[in-house]
Length: 209
Image 1 (cartoon, rainbow, N blue to C red):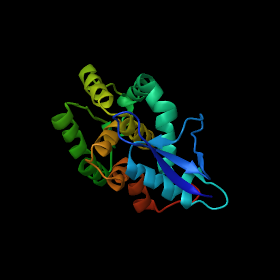
Image 2 (spheres, one colour; image 1 turned 180 degrees about the vertical axis):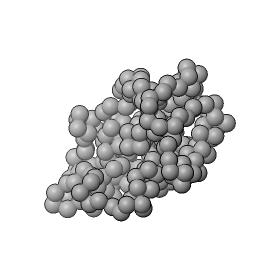
Image 3 (tube, rainbow, N blue to C red; image 1 turned 45 degrees about the vertical axis):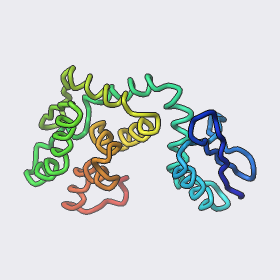
Image 4 (cartoon, rainbow, N blue to C red; image 1 turned 90 degrees about the vertical axis):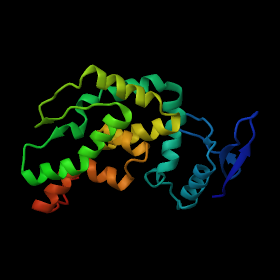
């Protein structure tokens, strides 16, 4: 498989890089050209495709999948994507603190409170937490502030945001990650603190997952 990128100059905009597979323009599931204005992303796409064997495994091509999602789903339907995301704010994972034990609550506080504080101080998003799993509703001002912050994301960041939010069940963690407040590893640790704690206490069950 011959993998390459070609640059296309469009007016005064930055060069548009298109992925080529065996000389043909690679396309998304909805048949749009797989293209980006980021040279670094274009290089990542090439690396992902060059690493494929005789069978293509989409699970090993996260950059390709994210770009296709942006082109096919996010860019043409920003308002719908944002509306869908906002429906999950009240269920944000880091707003539901464990009833116990104290050691788990302490770990949650260590990982989650800095994000809650950052959202309030840097983004004007004040999220309220509750103890236990009973649903609660964030105030209207929190919804409005979070929506403003999400709407301010460009299509690239919005695509990453929605992917991280889906994986972590947390708009708060997704916002922190796309703004560089958390690394991918830190985001994972914060999102799965409960699961990690349980594994440490009881061991890992290979049949669960």
